[in-house]
Image (cartoon, rainbow, N blue to C red; front, side):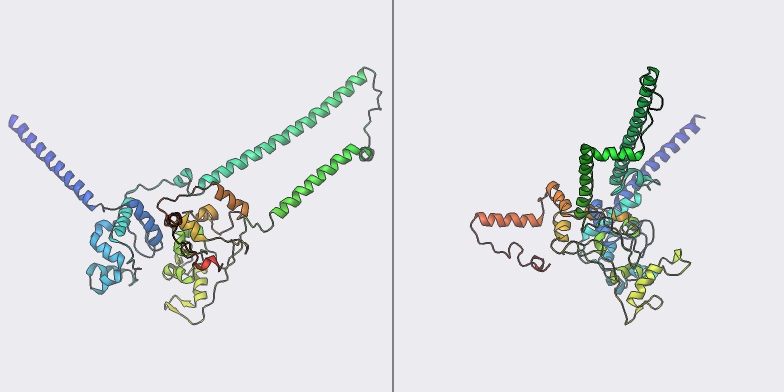
Length: 432
């Protein structure tokens, strides 16, 4: 028996040693598999350049990216993302296989990305695929962009409505109590013999009105109230002239920002690519739409037929989805402008987006929740001035302010400073 127990002990020790060794090997393998990169920086690049074609856990235009770090070598992924067609042309087996699997769809090359940028993207993908799935309704509980503000608005409206209800109830109570007091006074006077039955008959409405009309104080008070009422209504009407907050016209194509910017999380500047470098954010051309919708037709929702809204894009471009050929009779989409400032007002998107770093939602509202876009903010001068009075300017590491400070240093040294140095050669300074 003793020899048997010794054998079992040796076996147990061996198993423990092998288990510990395998655990260490697996841990090292996982650490080695984890890409070295900044996931936060990769998230920004991914949302700007990748979300239109890729998602982590589901196929969009391209394949789902979950598990891509384990499936392919990092060096190969860097080459593929920068220029996939170069690998295909070189006859790389993995590249040719992926190219053929997706109907020879050409992936957009990104030569401007550095190796570290690609590593950051891969680190973000690894982080997202290992993150636990959010429970249903979690986003609503924590509040996405604009969610907290919406909840605050609901509370404010509830409090305001409750306050009005309390005032109305208080007025009704006062009226009832006043009526009760008059009735009690009348009963007391009758019991004391000071009021004869029939003398307390109420006057007719016409008599009361004539009496009030002869009361100069009452007439003056009524006139003051009417002047104040109509003056306030007139002032409000004039103040809101040209203010189109809540304006929501019907567009020729029902484009859903809720789907594209919200569900698919496509970065705003993927479509409105001029916002960071130009005065105008610009309406994206239909060619931008076709980056995805030459393949994505939403046919699963329409019994195999192309979505009617996507079909409008094809018709405008004179595009045949069967042959994937463009005709010679394209027609522009007649979009209805929503946000429109008066000609006397100058607004530059690049100054606010690039220099100030303001998010689109601060002016346009929770755009990612809008099935149809409407004007969220009043866009009045008062609204803009209030923002300029309260917003803090962050000049650290900002090229614009670095340039301004450099010009100030030149002025202090007595050096020559021309309008060109201050941006006087920019087209928007004169042509707007």
